[in-house]
Length: 388
Image 1 (cartoon, rainbow, N blue to C red):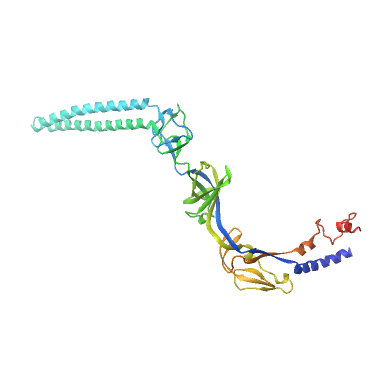
Image 2 (cartoon, one colour):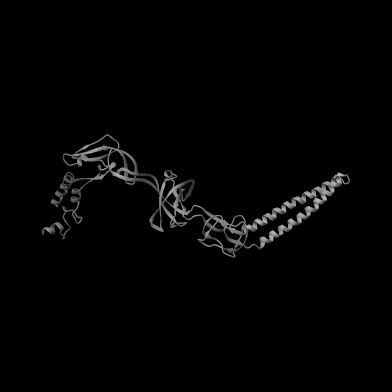
């Protein structure tokens, strides 16, 4: 126990001597790198142009001519409603128009007769005004019936569903024989996409990061369907409307995404990286170089610190001197920082220091302290190897 106490007193002195004798500076080279700062988000892939095709009239789906993934052209018939009732409505409207036209013909002739008699003073003004009123009412009724015929013809046209764009069918919402009712809202029959090679990502960016996002910034993203592929795009729109969910405020950012190989499918989740700043081939050093500060007490005998009053500086070893070098920094990207002045490519800067003696004095190979006695009944490795 007395020996152990003496060794415990000597241990700090041994470690201190080791720091002076086995000090090692960790250095890094100033070299050209690509630096960037980025914002991450998640989003959903969707076509740039997506159209919901519906119907403005109620009826039964009579024929469907397309299915999922069908390619369609603008004006192509993709479905038809049963036209029986619509044809009947058109025939009724035309019949009413014919009756109104006959009435107008009679009232026109009657008005002309009364006008002739009135001009000759053979009838009273009241009789003449009554004949003119009947004529005007018949003329207006013809105009109303003409509008009814036009409306019936339009509704009959709505029974033929055509594609409004050139594209592909993403979704078919109805089946043949199904009844669709058009009341306050237009029922959706199909969802079409114009061009699946031209996609976009709608990304939700947190309010803390939205200030760094601007139109035109470079974007990369991945999808779980192709984890080894990196897709590229650009920010095309930063929407001002905020969305709040569970007290988290996000803003929608629209990102262009070419899809020439048709790998991207509508609805896929994209893991997005938006590069808010990028610099190519700039001189940089690890950020830890700017945080390092030497300690004179830990330097070997004869070494000295040559400091500088500069606020921003790195340290370099020049012979027995540890010298401060004032630098000017630019952007920070990841664990590196750009150096705009003060260094040149190839300069070695100090980023830290280690002391092998401290490690050796702390523990032996089996993790036990070689200066402390082992537990009763068990010899430590040092004693065993010496055969004692």
